[in-house]
Length: 334
Ligand SMILES: Cc1cc2nc3c(=O)[nH]c(=O)nc-3n(C[C@H](O)[C@H](O)[C@H](O)COP(=O)(O)O)c2cc1C
Image (cartoon, rainbow, N blue to C red; front, top):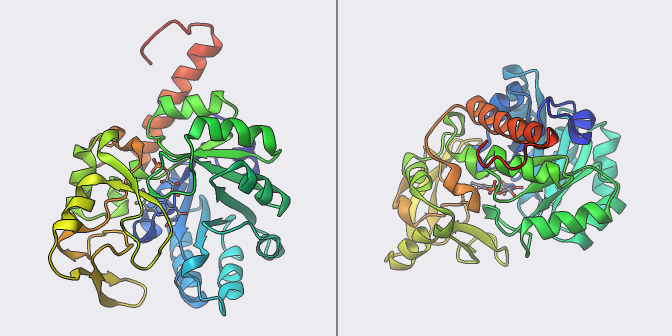
């Protein structure tokens, strides 16, 4: 049993938060992770309050586990932000923000609706600002992370400094796809890990099969930190597979395909270098669309249920940590 300040605060049985991942982190994935004892996250930004409520209520019917909602404020209509956040905070245990300066008013709003507030941060200064804003925990995201990346340095030096700087529980994010990596950050003092890329190949994520195949074939060296996919969200560095940037550069034309916006039931065109997650509704030149992937990608080896991913990561971490605590640290294999 890996009990930490995070599991005790949030009520999980496992110190893993599944990262919100755009259209891949819909009810089925969040519910599967929550059922397996982790914190199951839904990306709810971009939706009006009534859709947020419906999506969370739908997920709640699938699981009695612990759920959270993720906001990237760039995609939230400022006129509806308060209502959107309130709709989420009334229904989930954790409301989380990413890619904007920590804001105590938003944290207070979350607390008024009796949810916990957290912020994914990329620097020590941002971690301090999140803690000062009243966040219940923070997530330190290293530059190894897949998708949009706030961190500018490697996870371990960042985690080291953030753990020194704040008293709240701290999760580690970026490049964690195995029990070995989870054990490492727990041993370093983190209260858990946030995992994204590994869940792209979960059955429940319903990612596009071409994207999943590319992720399974890739190694950490095949990822690149870039600002290539900036249409719709400029000035926001991210990590993707190098191959998709090359394919988008080669692509002649402006529209690479189309995708279904599930909540609205309408299909929309996708522009070259546009920010989106490639799910099973997406059609067109998939190879040229953003293949978000962290340096954890080497541990994505096949499609499997989210519960199996959770079990593998946790069992491996537990074995390693027990071995360490018994003083058997000279053994090389878990
Ligand atoms: C496919 C994908 C989509 C992502 N979308 C989001 C998102 O919608 N919101 C968010 O806060 N972070 C998002 N992230 C970043 C994660 O929060 C997290 O920092 C990252 O996945 C951790 O690194 P890892 O991918 O190596 O596990 C995304 C990551 C991936 C791989």
